[in-house]
Image 1 (cartoon, rainbow, N blue to C red):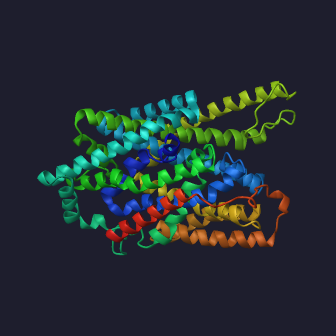
Image 2: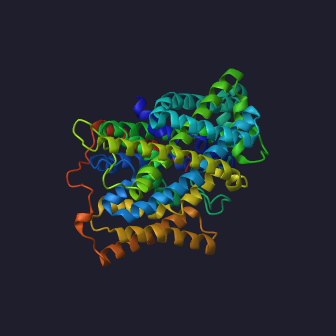
Image 3: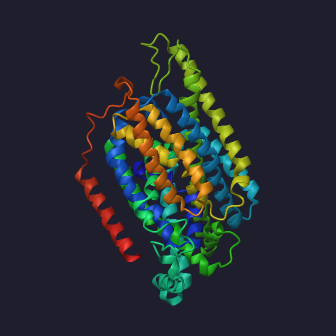
Amino acid sequence: MGDRRILIAANISAEQIVGMSGSGYVIGLAIASYEWMAALTLLIVGKFFLPIFLRNGIYTMPQFLEQRFGTRIRTLMAVFWLALYIFVNLTSIIWLGSIAVNRVAGVNQDVAIFGLGAFALLYQLRGGLKAVALTDIVQVTLLVLGGLLVSGITLSELGGDAGILGGLNTLTARLPEHFDMILSPDSPHYKELPGLSVLIGGMWIANLSYWGFNQYIIQRALAAKNIAEAQKGVVFAAYLKLLMPVIVVVPGIAAVMLAPGLEKPDQAYPTMLRYLPPGILGLVFSALIAAIIASTASKINSVATIFTLDIYAKFRRDPHAPVQEGDIADPAVDEQAPVQAKRERELVLVGRITAFVAIAIAILTARPLLGASDQAFQFIQEFTGFFTPGIVVMFMLGLFWRRATEGGAIAAAVFSVVLSYVGRAFWPELPFLDRMALVFLASLALAVIVSLARPARQEKNLIVTRDVSFATPASFNMASVGVILILIALYGTYW
């Protein structure tokens, strides 16, 4: 069961719990579409993406790009992911985590930022991804149970003698606008969640990029023993995504009535924690801190892995001591074993230095980047949206269209950023999810045109797909049908 939990644990952290609860405070249940649509996305990843990645022994996403397209795209995307992980993801995790520490424990927020970052670094350096995965087993259980307690107690507080159901009825009656899943154009929050585009537009781009091609997330599935175990983890994560809005969004909506007039929406969840009895509060708060530390450590691990394997090792390559991903020196059969062992120790040291530099930068830039933001969750979505259309184009074509070329992939990546920036500057009223969908279509067209105009030699494509089976066991198929039926019921209820 532990292997099934670690994928979702990479996602459950401060930006998820605190950030989405803050958006629930402002927008309402509609923000849950990020969770519910992710459940469906995970099934697609498990059925169509993971079989190709695991068949080809992929360890990092830049590695896949190099084997499929060439060295230039690997280096380009490695640099992009490093910038994104440090300046958007790491900063948001420790910033939102510091809000929770400040509101619950009364610790100065700047001290909390430093403490969370430093502890996560030590945690990652001592045990790496293995230590993170082991503690995730306990962490996910505590967060899910603790989150349900927060929701239950806050709803009971609103419902009085009528209990939890009475509290839910009170919320729906007093705040009906907070329970619209599909926002109309006259909604003040239509720009964040533009109606049907949530179901058939840009949110698919965001979810496919995050759950399918994000090193930080997908590294958990790539570490599975085999495809069967990876798919079990994906299905388990999909069902938890269906449950997550109860844990993170409902407390945010309840805070509208229980804690009106908060200075910032992102304070909603930490404020709702105060309704818990002291002993339970300590347990849930500890689980939240554990999630922040584990998520930060996982992100640090991703930064160190990508920089070490995808940048440093490529430019520092010693022709007399080649080291590739997955190589293990065997002194009994390898004459270069002593040299290779020294090289491996060097890579470990570089990884540790990279981890230290990454978290130091995140600590120093967290407040300047996020201090003025009311909803950090929306900050994350919009600014990652500059890059995700191009990422999805290059990976989808790389996985499923053999004629796609490196030139086409690079064109899509660069054009995505440029067009997104131009669109935001000259069409600011366009919802960013709609912008992502339009940029995706334009980038896709450009990638196809460039690929057809300058075909690449087939020997450059080292990714094997001809013997990959996309068949899934009956258990996976039945679980997938269950997810789809639950989604139909949820959207049918709150349409």
